[in-house]
Amino acid sequence: MSEMPKTDQLAGKVVLITGGTSGLGRWTTLITAAQGATVIYSGRNAEGAAETDRRLNEAGLKAEYLPHDVTKEDEWQSVMDNVLKRYGRLDGLVNNSGVSRLKPMDQLSLEDLEYLLSVNVDGMFLGTQYAFRVMKMRGGSIVNISALNALRGSPNSTGYGMAKAGTTHLARAAAIEGRKYGIRANAVHPGVLFEDGDKASPGAIALFGEEGAQKFVQFNIDTTPLGRLGHPRDIGTAVAFLLSDASRHVTGTAVSVDGGRMAGEYLHHGIKSQK
Amino acid sequence: MVNLADKVAFVSVSDGPISRACVASLKAAGAKVCAAGSGNADLNLEVDKYDPASWDTAFDVCSQKLGGLDVLVIPTAGPSSQPIEDVPLEDFVSAHRAMVVPAFLAQNRGIIAMRKTGNGGAVVHVIPAAARSGLDSAVAACTASAGILFSSKSASLECAKEKDGIVVNAVLVGPVAGEPQLPYPKDVAAVPPQAVADAVLFYATDGAVYMSGMDLPVDGGFLAG
Image (tube, rainbow over all chains, first blue to last red; front, top):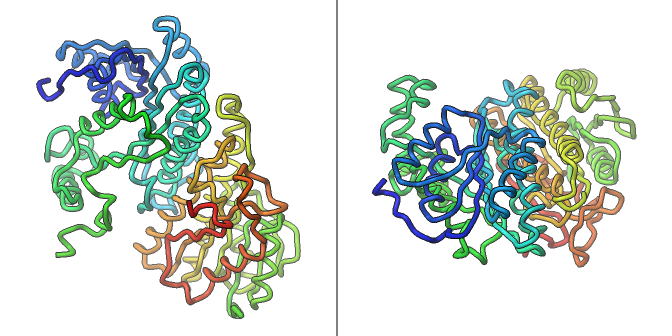
């Protein structure tokens, strides 16, 4: 955990992170805790929570886990009641829980669309709403984890792009409405992330096979101007900034942490193909 | 004067000033026009807007009776709401889905129908300008409008990838008299429905065949800054 320096950037803040039981949410939990926040992370996966706890312990950090399905309003009520009962306030919410399902438009069913919207839009709407009810007393910061598909079109994304554009735009609407309460709201757009450098993840291998997964990795390296893949740590650091007072004048914006993929037309064409 | 004499157009909504202006303008330009719902199109069809099979049937009937499907216009209007902290979940979901599901189905099933004809085509969404700007007390409409816009951009790329000759674009409209009113700032001028129809016609012509994935504001300057 030497890669995760401890700071006091978020000292005194109480932060709730959804989906902290895996991947990006786990890293955001670790980084937010390392920056001094009192962190509650939630999610549906108890085994994943055990792993998050193990990593926290390893780093000498603490955070509290609460079971949570973000699509269920009564569970939001319960989580928020818990947070307020234990800590008396909420300064930050990271709406991280999300799902993807990429299919060509002739194969994407209404059931697929509803699955995408229920988590990526409805779940984040509920989070925003419950955070508003608490934060309107003293302000706060809401961060929605979105996707590059929210900022530009992408094949196989007529449903996922619709959902994630909603995620991003929900933050903009919340920024407009939150201005009178001192509530800021922003969206973060990760590029392609890998935890193990340029090694294909088990998930990518399961999807594409060993060779296909490595080609997928190389394609994403080639189409990222900085020439490397992102790490969940990169996103967590940006989220921590948006939760902190250092970003007190930042609201309603979409922050891309993507190695430059949104800087040009490389996403679908590839840098090498232009040379 | 725009000439759409050899085109068949389908308008996915028949009521409201924008839809009526689009139907009238497409007809005036010479297109044969089918519309979902009652009205003055050449062919009016009842469609269950939440049922994929109903859209498939409507597009098939349109193609059979009017001779194809070249232009698909998908107008979507959105309601304002309560402040975020007060909107019941069921109201949010209901308002959101009432916008996105018909637009999603009309777009995706319509493109599949266009591909069957093999002649390419133009899909034109008409979406609230809230797709690109947050508004106060309109959380469902903002979220849904942005969703439709980016679904249209993804569709445009899928069509390009398939080389099916179909382009997908959007017109972003500001306040229009007679449409559900979103809480735009008071200094934003109302948009005449005909101005929206004129932009739709532009996208429908062969002159716009190299434009895809674009969004054109017709909004009285709202999105200018």
